Image (cartoon, helix red, strand yellow):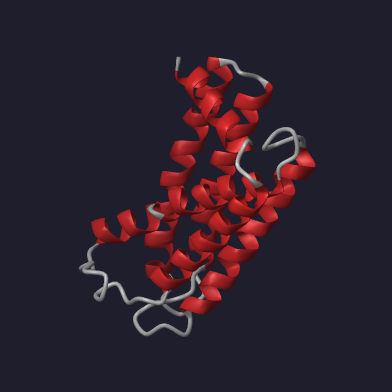
Length: 174
């Protein structure tokens, strides 16, 4: 039932005019850029391990949505027509993730982190894999496997992004 609902939703997304899909990508990128220009304290986030993990975990859906929007803007007959389309969309999303981390290096109270990009990649890959599975397989078991692998991967990536940099204070890029 869920897969049928998602397949129907994807059909609707494919009908989005390309100019609107591009506008959505640009709007989402602007929102990410603006949020990353804010210090955690300015956003009302107190520093604790639990909050840090939650903030790092937010990267997954943030960049998962970016992946969906980029797929909408690049789409052909399907959002993920083939592996090449998937790789191109993922490369674009990760290029933006890298630029966002560089941007954060200039924001007081924020630090750039390669580990954040790992969480971004997990979220974007999960959404791309879900879309591809729904469009090509339409099977509940295949979709369930993607979710069963992807969600824990996002959580683990956020744990790495939370605790690995603290373990190596001499490596500010972590």
